[in-house]
Amino acid sequence: MKQTELSAPNHVAIILDGNGRWAKKRLLPRKAGHAAGSKAVEQICEDAYHLGIHYLTVYAFSTENWKRPQDEVDALMKLLRQYLKDCIKRSTKNNMCVRVLGDITPLDEDLKQSILELEEVTKNNTGLHFQVALNYGSRDEMLRGIQKIAAEVQKGNLALEDINEKIVDDVLDTKGIPDPDLLIRTSGEQRLSNFLLWQSAYTEFYFTDVLWPDFNKKELEKAIEYYNGRERRYGGV
Image 1: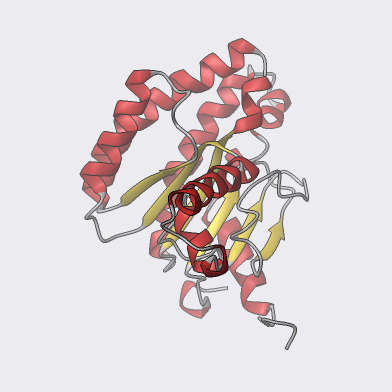
Image 2: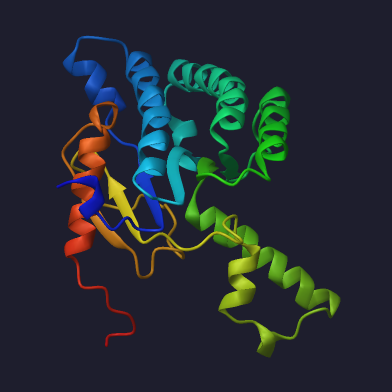
């Protein structure tokens, strides 16, 4: 399908899966798969923008990923440091607005400072809005949001009967970001894995056997073509 024939969704979310299997197939260490996956993220940002996607959100590191072997976690943190360093320069060049979703408090101080700097430097950029989910889990996000709402009720700033979907939207990490129209998961797995549970109420899901480091513009076009073929309905109508 030609690019001009594609009607790109406004917001695409991707669960990046398959880095380890990609490396294993090539008899490489898992960190090589994560490095290849990081390169794929860089390229897919460019491809998404040129295809007309305005918001792209990727699931990079979940709250459950801390349970992985320590050497793998250390390798991921090292890769994240380099990625954040490069991302400031790349985002400025490409006019990309970057935002991190998740609870960054457990991260090392230098990583937190890099994240805050990246968000500050790129906040006024008008190109692709790129969200990276780091130490993110949707249940954790909702729990943190509930605690914020409860605190406002306790202070007397908010009445129970006034709590609505907009109030909930505004306490989530994705405040101000439209819900995803299309969610892609690579590597053949078919589950959400605690990713954007609230935000994906009306999202179309696309699952592919392609491992994340092999996911490219052609594969993204296939996902958009699938999305174009869906009959979008809301509220059971």
